[in-house]
Length: 170
Image (cartoon, rainbow, N blue to C red):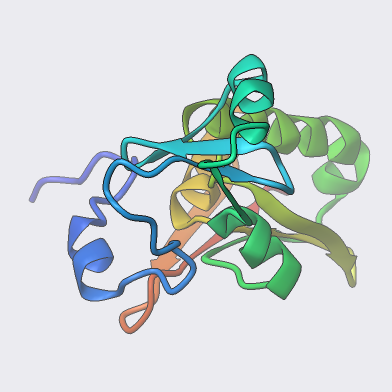
């Protein structure tokens, strides 16, 4: 019996089956800029480029929009949830762990501006991180496991594009 290697799950099926209602209806060849985070949509991709944003935002033919990540943050619509279960280890290292989570968001955002953290909340000793994209929650779980060991459990919703990651270490 072979074991599967931990890593990101192929979500191509989910993307095709469950369309993202937050993706903007932008025509082929059209350029748009997000007024919230200053991301640019060009050639069917979102990316950050501050000098290009300044140049494009003054042009009259550039569409001013709110990107899907900013909309999801505004609406509290999450596709990923990371739960850090209460433990003495979490209490002792919470600052370091939260820094690791924020650093992983920055790395992910550099590759895809739509991968963001919506919120980080503490409830009954556990920490709950909501993300705009299921891949970011998987990445955070993988980085927690790599840096601090412990147990990581991944669950995916069958009917929507949502990943729930639970991490614990005694």
